[in-house]
Length: 629
Image 1 (cartoon, helix red, strand yellow):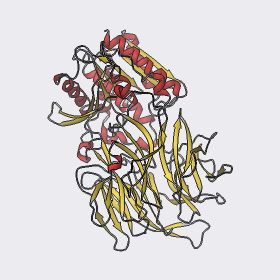
Image 2 (image 1 turned 180 degrees about the vertical axis):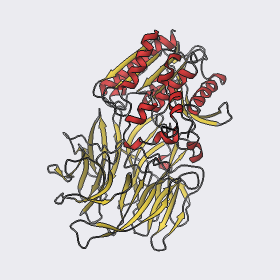
Image 3 (image 1 turned 90 degrees about the horizontal axis):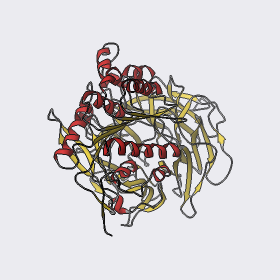
Image 4 (image 1 turned 30 degrees about the vertical axis):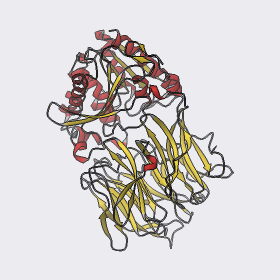
């Protein structure tokens, strides 16, 4: 095919706004107890649907009218599968339904919010996390919902990742208290259950196994043979696997090295490893600089062996080994392979079997850009990491140097990984280069890198974005006269801070539900983040001046660059007032801007029509202000 010479940014791409809006998100997956049925959760235009795939039958939807989604904090922990039944959360309640046939039945009452249902090995009881918005507890109920649920554990501010010992006589869970976030300091608890007197079991002999205010623990899990309680701890500076021997009551570090096994626990139900059914191995996801691989780790020796069957994939989430055979299921993707549900038998070197694709196979490989893992140094000498995508479209060749979009992730305790980013490919296939910045404060590079943002949010992230832009220009990866910046939520905050501190540096900016007023954020945010800013900025009222100086709304008069602002009408994390006060300042001063408010959307857009509109409007905005300014 003869390539056509055409200006960067104006290339015609198969990745249209409509195509982006039609993809689904696969949120989680799990096996039934007999290992015969795999269930996964699909998000279709904001509606959560459970899908079951028996090994000898076609996949089929299990739910229809009820949208499966837990809403404790930011969500997650939406369902579990056990003994031929699916237990899921919808409208705050836990429901149960047979995998074969039958009506949906409520298990818990319509009060508060439930998450992370976990069924006992004998199929009688269910642990779950419950929140009424003020108090969070670990609760227990019988699986048929005949008894009123009872508090099993309370006293901490947050609970996460409850699990059962194979005997059904012990449980473990994660908890933490304000002002810690779960990636800052958590504890793992072990308790014995008393089942003699009450209708529902109660907890006794509770003790803390590991963790504390300056150590983060992630994902406790008992071995199927009952000998160990595994968990991930960042005590060494990186998230590593530990085994707690239940007989000797001693922990042992199983993995070592400067790689991350944990994830920032923004939501319930997250996991990065699981025991094999024999208890001899652990299948775990290893994150090295945003690039993932699956490994099997020998329980006795700690020897790790990569699973070459998944070598084509660079982002592997929610791995779950089969409970009955040497196989694993995982949500797999790479930068050029959209997410899919995959299973693989590990005893032989066979290719993974794909059960569900999240997008239609309509995008030519020649329009997908493979990222380059890059690092550079900020002005203060600190090293910064990211991913660079060069423009790629087999039908076109650019002229000169391409424009660049500097992407800023949210969180801010999050990370760009080498997964399939439809939005990034949307731009790179049109002739834009893209730099995804993992500024200092991002997860995935060890605790020291994460803590670099403490007290410096709005400073270090801004410096790392500016140095990242300089890096792509100095290395001839981008045109210095055509720089754009884009980010959402906390990333939107960084976008606004860049515009106030470095006016004129960027030709165009895109801000999605970005934070403009830190005081309002501190006052209006939900319980999960109620003290998050204590570490990022300092506690109020002592740090009032810091909040004022670093709030973009108080220096909005410095913004002179064209900006497109997108906001959800029902956003409870960053309410629309934050965007509209900023818009008023831009309008009064005649700064070029576009403002779009989407009905029915919250913090993060889910509707197909919203996503299609979003990317169509961003493309036209960039053409006007970045390409033809």
